[in-house]
Length: 297
Image 1: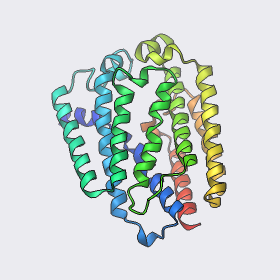
Image 2: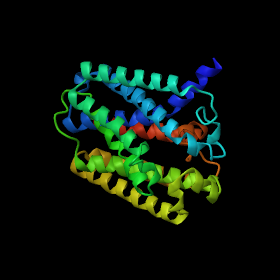
Image 3: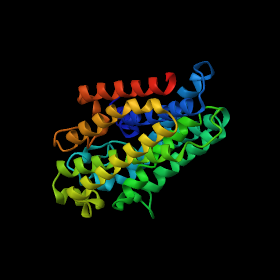
Image 4: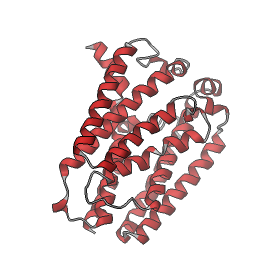
């Protein structure tokens, strides 16, 4: 059982909550096409969410395997299953391959074609981020740009679970999702840099040879501003009821900023958001408000 636990750890089930962005894609499509709830296929939403979670685990396996030599230099991540030698790489890739094939077969047979296209794009994004010769995660600024593309890709995965989604999401919505992801990613980089020494950071991740606290903080402000700007445009142009969500968005950025600059916060490990229960509750309530505004107003 202990061995099984290590394999599950590599699949990073605790990161699956990031795929909730697909639900925002579903919400966006419902609001954009003005579809009544009676026409919503709940099963398609569930299948789309599950498939995106399974595929993200495939990407995490690739990420963990390719990062093992770097993780071995990190004071905490050196204890992960691969660098610590607690898993069999061949078995791990067999599991990842099985998940990949199963996900693609289900997607192609039962889901809309555009959904399958963006699911494949989700997988390729992980390859671009982790695999040489590109390996975007080792290039300062490009790492945030590429990794944040997963947000609009998840948006499109959720958007296209429905047959009625015949048009591409508005460009402003794509930019908003990307900018929000870039904000979160930059905050994570800042928090990581605060937790370990500069030498440890540079050995663990090459981008820290370029990044500074000041440059990361400046990027956070730019991405936060771009997120709020595009969201406001979306509200004015497509759904005026979303203007009532702006106070929640502003509160999120202020609160998350304060957490980012705290050395003992979860921001460097966002999967541990549950340790800050007030912030978690706030996020869930905010998502509920956004859903109500999008569907009923």
